[in-house]
Length: 360
Image: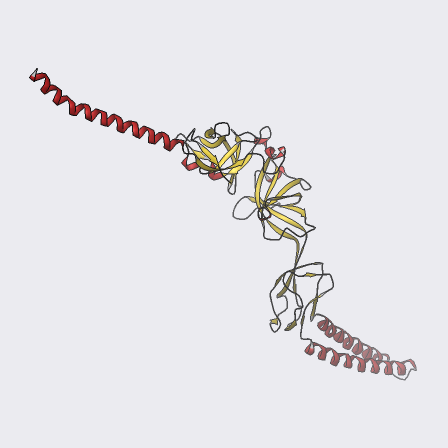
């Protein structure tokens, strides 16, 4: 019995230790379970819902920039001190309105002097011609007088053109995009003074890779979304297609014309243009353009994304195949379906079946 008591006393500390370890492990398990149950906040992009119709699933998006349909930079043909620029940046002008003027005093004086000389030459020619008609002088004298008059009048006409060139008039209806000078500045011939923009129609300028440029034709339809206008949608059409690439890389340019009757779209705004995906490799499949950062790669080199399973509110890993890269977006050619809720923010905290909460 004494030996048994001694053995029991020795075993008690080990039992206490085992119970403590077991309790600790249970606690860790409970904490881990609690941590996993806390949903991760994520933001999503509903695949194929970018343009509000099912055709988006067969379109590719390109990033572009808005420009005015017509830009005119006005400059004087003669030099002088700017006297007035009676327009303000952003103001609207009509064709024929005065937009700038330089001091015309010097040119006016030159014209008046030359016109006076021309008048004298005319009087001299008329007098000599009258005498010639009477047969009193040789024909050569009349011809010389007529030539002097014509040269003097031509010089006066040129001086008058300089007077006219001291004023700039709007050649189109449009908005003042920029004022490069103010009253008191010295203007030189050809130096821009005022920029006018016609924005009743605008153009989206879009870079397109060389292996896709031949899939588009002028007149083709396009859908344009302006980022700063709450992604408002505008219908457009392909108006121009470049035939020469950028010198630095094989990128061509499409120009998409967009009606802008309310002038809401301003030059310089960024936009996204959605065009039919007509490339051969994608002719029989749907493609979706998604943010490139939402696509991850496994150690084996497989591309995957996370989508939200709304029935369980959990993230699901989805293996995908990718296509062309378009600026900050990449085409997904398989693995995603129309309406999938692609996770585009918070994905770095996820694994398969992680609980998630969709936030705006």
